[in-house]
Amino acid sequence: MPGPSFAFTYGQAIVGIYSGYSFDTCSNDAIVDSTVLLDEYFAVIWFVGEETEKDETFSSIKQLTIRSYLEKYGRLIISSGANITWDLDLDSNRYSTTKEDNEFLNHIIKADFAGKIAMNKTITGSNDGIFDEFEFSLDPQIYAIDSLDIINPISPAKACLMVDSTKIAGIRNEMGHPINSGRLLYFSSPFKIIESSSIQAKLMKSILSYLLVIDHAEDKKLERDLTKPEKYTLEQNYPNPFCPSTVIRHQIPTAGDATLKIYNINRSVGVYN
Image (tube, rainbow, N blue to C red; front, top):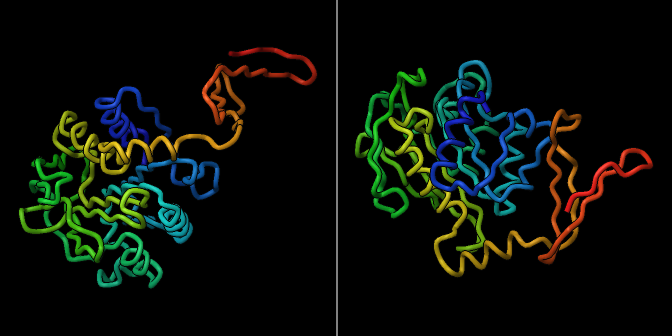
C-alpha cells in the first residue's frame, strides 16, 4: 500500500455504497512478512502507487503470494498508478525486468504490454456487462503520472475498461468453476484519480458485485457456504500491544450466543457476551 490517502479513497468508496461492510488495510510489507495472510480474506484490493521508478511493483515474493491466493480461488483487484504492465513486460526494455516478471504478467495477470497513452483521457466500460454503463475522466492533478499502460488481454482474460475508445485499460479473468472461481480485475488507470467520489463509489459497487458474486440466488447460497465457519476459532488480537482498544475475532459453526472471557495471568479481568 503506497500510503494512507490511497487506502482512504478505497475505503470511502466502499462505505459510500455498503455501509455495513468492514475491511482491513495494511502495507505490502505486512503481506511479504506474513503479518497479514491473504488467505484469510475472501476478496483483496491490491493497489500500487509510485513504486515503478524506484522499486519493483511486484517482487518475486509478492508474485508468489498473489499466485497462491488466486490458485485457491481468491478474489483480487489490482489497481495501478505505476505502469505495472510496463514494469513487468520484457518488451518494455526496462533494465530490471526478469523472465519471471514476464511470466507472472502473462500467466497470472493474463496481460501483455501494448504501449502507453497520455494520461489526460476518458475511460469507458467495454460492452461485457460489468462496467458497460461507465464513462469518466481522470484528474492527473490528484496524482502526478503522465501516462497509462495499454493492455493486451491474454485468453481467457477479457477487456472491461477502455481508454480513448479503442485501447484497453482494464481486464477481468475468472479461474475455475463459473461460480466458485478465482476472480481477477486489473486496471491500468489509478482508482484514486477518478474525477469524483460519487463515480468512485458507483464503480466500487460494480467491482464488489463482480468480485463477491452476490447478485444471484445461487451465488448468495455460495456466499453463505463460503463464509459459514466449520469449527471454533479464536484469532490473535490486533493490534497487540494495544492502547486503548483491540480487536479479537472469533467464529463458531452454529448461530447462538457466545461468552468471551479474558484472563490476566491467573485472574479473570473481563467477561463479554
